[in-house]
Image 1 (spheres, rainbow, N blue to C red):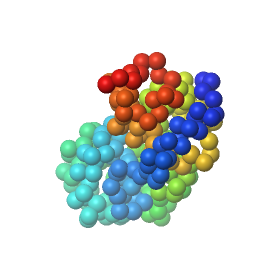
Image 2: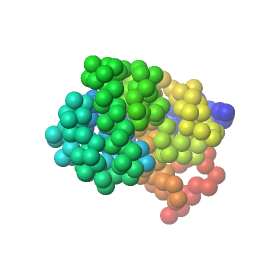
Image 3: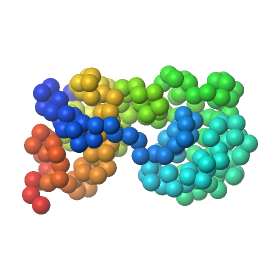
Length: 216
């Protein structure tokens, strides 16, 4: 369900985000399309910082699905053991690498449907990869995007997919490519979960969150 925030206000919100950070990038470190996909899979329910720390050595040696299969699941676990759910993630990375070789000639498919056919790749992961790798105007809804979008008043939704659909309808096309990055960064550093830093927020006057505080 969409709320009634007017188009002009929404445009102003993203114009301010764009002024502050014209070209936002993922904070995940990667070396090519394949390592980007692996990093995104590993980042589920984990911080980008923890993923980057674990993959620094891994990606210096392993940067193709063929090399990942040769490495093997047990060895991969040793590289990523500091990341949450590393056992399941290692299994998925090996399985998706095998499927990439068997079904896609070792290349990353360029559609959401094909990406979601890979083990460990859901809608959000697919959208992140399409946005970061190909520059497509996809909206990847993680906990930050869900929280910030609903707090600001961009939408009133109860699920990630509903949020994605709602944001696609209300965000002006000119802002779509970077929209989810801006919302993620805002949620990660300003509009944090427990105590949002409203006095530091550059869109606080446009925000429709009833619980915001304007004083330090």
